[in-house]
Each structure stands twice: as structure tokens, then as C-alpha cells.
Length: 477
Image (cartoon, rainbow, N blue to C red; front, top):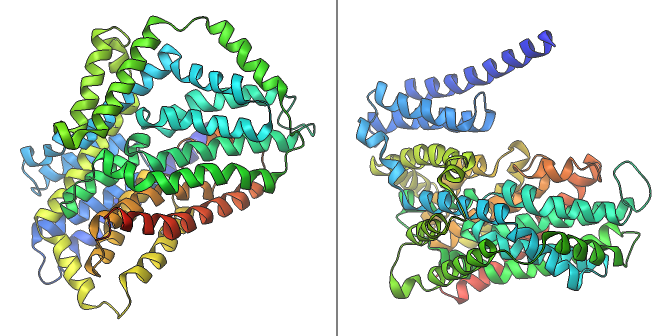
């Protein structure tokens, strides 16, 4: 045990050392023409921070605290400038949405929605897959954590269904049926994350970087309108494709409906808290959808919903304080987005765009988008976090396309979405993936094989259908 702990400590130390070396190499490298010293030193700390987020010698929140401190200690930014990122409204939108997720879990409303759908439509294996997809779609706008939504609501239900139909990991009986239900539910979680800005915290990171780096505001409605058509197509086609690929032994699952009915009986009548949360949930959706009319910022609509939950005692202040995921996101995203903002303010992004434009080959931006999208997705084999993917690649890839003449809004949404689509590639693709993979219904080789197919399907749909759709509604004009 002591040897194992010592080995782990050395490994983490080595990872931390690599991050520091990356920062030092950039810090002391010759500064390119057109870039000032402050911007270059900020880039050094920024790059070291991203390396820290990817290699994780420390939790990413701790890495962000160290980076923020370094900015001031090394006289790169003033104290007020280093802390300015915590006023970013998109970050507060995600923090508030985390609280909605807690409300769905605490009241049981998320499970009730899923069981209600299953009790009506869960008579076959394929229908169960579609029901879980529909349940996740309903819950996703208010659960910006795939881990909270997938691990806290969807996975326990689908795992119970597997047991009810006699499918257990490590056993041959109905093995493919369990594998199909588990992987299909996982795909539903990731696809819903693509559709809603508040469906995943990395979406908010993409939106924040869009504002700070390119001065492009992506509203909740913009993201939803751009993604709903290709997202619905993927939601419909993916379970059918998995059904054909995995070929579950059981086609009919009458026990699923009975399981759902039994669980609904156990839950009892809908509680007052659930009813109130439904009203708040619908009101927030309507306010987000009509933001162009009333002009209320999306973050403050979410904060209004949080206020309503606190006033009605659906959540207590202790519940808010205990939402570690929300405060962790606030910390690391506030620091990272702020550094990106100052890289833009100090002219580094402009210098990069000028350099890329001057070296651009005579390739249309559309062809470049297709090529870069494919590279962007499959580079995720080297990453274990969607947020790390955004941090490492989003700004650079977007800069190349925008410099080539592509409309910024469409490009930024596409790259934001594809940072979710790449999650399928590995069994460590994002935070929630190990939960579904760890159920033990599918070996690693099969997971990677089917994940590659599903990720490729996403690329095809987002480019072949998503791009024309976004062009039709004016996002590429």
C-alpha cells in the first residue's frame, strides 16, 4: 500500500513538473513580433494551466487557484484584473443550473418523469431506449452536469431496468440487452448535452470563450435553435443504430413497465415540492425562450429560478453550499475565461489571426471546417475531459476558421457541440462515462468500437445536416 501511494505521489509530482516546464519554456522563449511581453507571459501561465487541467496533478479547481495567484505574483495582471472573471454571467448561469439539478434529484422529480414515461411506453427494449432519451431531454436544460444527470438520475433507473429483465454484468443471460440499454442511455445523456447550452458545463465554457475571445454572444436560445434539428435527428437515429449494432436478445420488456409502475407507487402522489419545481421549471424555459422580448439576461433568469426554489424551501441554503460541483466550476471557469479574455484584450488572439491569415492556403473555409472538425473530434483520444478539450482546442480552431472568413457564430456553436460528441470515443471520454462503462456490460474494445461509430455519426449529422440548418436560420450569413 505504501509503495502504491509513493508511486502515485511521484506520478502526480511528475505531471505537475511537466506543467511548470511548459510554462517556463513559453515564458523564456523569444517573443514573436507584434506581441507584447505581458501577453506572452500571460500565455505562458495560460498554457501551464491548461496542461494542469489535462494532466491533473491537482484537482482543476486547485490548479485554477494557483494560476490566479501566479498572475498577480509575477505581475502579469493586477489583483482586480485577476479576479474579474468571477463576474462572468454565463458562469453564473451554469452555477444556478447546478442548483436546478439538485432540485430535480432532491424532490425526485427527475426520476418521476422517467418512471412515468416508462410506465406508459416501456413495453419493448427499443422503446425503453427512446423513453430514457426523452426523459434525459426533458431534464437536460436544468442539469449542466452530465455526471449529475447521467449518474444521479438516468443510470440508476436504467441499471434497475437491466436487473428487472434478468441482465446482470458478467452473466450471459440477456447480456446484449443490458449492453444496449446502458450504452443507449449514455448516448442520450451526451446528445442532450449537445442540444442545450445548459446541458453541460463545457457548453458554458465555449459560450464564455466566444464572448471573451471573439466578442460573440451565444444566448440560450441561439444554441437551442442551432442544435435542435440535428440533435433531434441524432436522438431518433442513435437508439435504432445501436439496436442494430448490438442486437439485444430481448425485444419485448413487459417487466420494465411493471418496474416503473411499482416505483411510482412507492414514490406516492406528486409532492408539493415537485409541483412547485415544475412551475419554476416551465417558467424558466419560457423566459429563456422569450429573452429577445423581455431582455432579461439568461443568467438572471436562472438566478430567479434559484431564488424561487429558496423562497419555497425546495432547496435550503445548505443545499446550495453543498453543491461542490457548482462552486468548483465557478472557480476554474472564472479563472480560465478571465485569462482568455485578457489574452484577447492584450492583442494575442488578433496577432494569431493575422499570422494564420497570412499563411492561409487557398482552401475554402467550408472545407477547412470539415477537416478541422474531424481532427477536433478524434484528438479527444488524448483527453479525458470535455472542458479540457474546449480549453486546449476551441480557441485555436475557431480562430483559424474565422480568419478564413467563416461566420463566427456558427463556427463557435459547432465546435462547442462537437466537444460533447467526442465523448463517445473512449471509456474515459468525460466525467459521466466511467459510470456507465463501469457497470460492466460492455468490454473496453466493444465500447471503443461502437463509440467510434457513434462519434462519426455525430460528425456526419452536425456537418451534413447541422451546417445547412444553421445556414438556413442565418447562423452562417
